Amino acid sequence: MNKKKLNFLSKLLFHISPPANWKFSVIILLGIIVGLGINILHISNAVSYLSDDPKACINCHIMFPEFATWERGSHGRVTNCNDCHVPHDNVFRKYMFKASDGLRHATMFTFRLEPQVIRIKNAGRNVIQENCIRCHANYLHPVSLRSTNAKSIFDELDGVCWDCHRETPHGKVHSLSSAPNIIRPDNKQVIPEWITKNIEK
Image 1 (cartoon, one colour):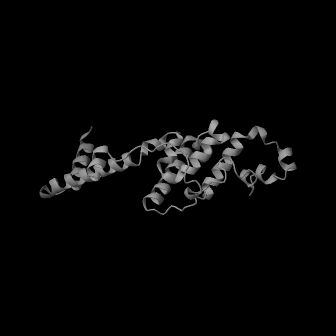
Image 2 (tube, helix red, strand yellow; image 1 turned 60 degrees about the horizontal axis):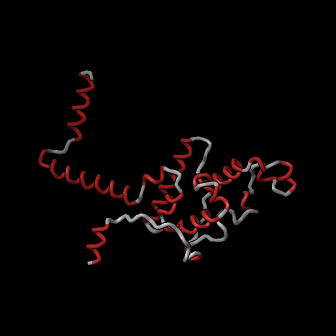
């Protein structure tokens, strides 16, 4: 590293370093912030969202009905959630979409703003429609679609596949209250067992 760069770094460190009598407090504060950040990442199981594992979608309990209806339907045998709900035309768009959608979901669930009945946003709606066409392209013959009055889907106008296929793949279940006894995998325990035992004493 040349002398110029070393001078720049030493000047930068000088300007961002706290005064000597604050150093201990700043180190403790930074430790708390970093620890809380790591704890939040652990509790929210954040790493799981990088995968295509459908169980990542039920880190939040509100998705239990959607998970169960997908798992027991025909799509549960050949797809995962990301096959339908994230873009697949390039990897950057896929992870940008996941990040954007994930941050919105995390904000809604953290501040308890989630609705009882989940409704898809326009961005998600467009992605699902793209993926319907991507996976079922072999069945989308322009003549047959137009003959069944689905011209708008093939021409990518206003219509979407689930205007007709309304129960694919999540059936009629769209809220927690509509499926109170649904069978689903248990969530991973996020609070360490020793803390739970101490709270119960």
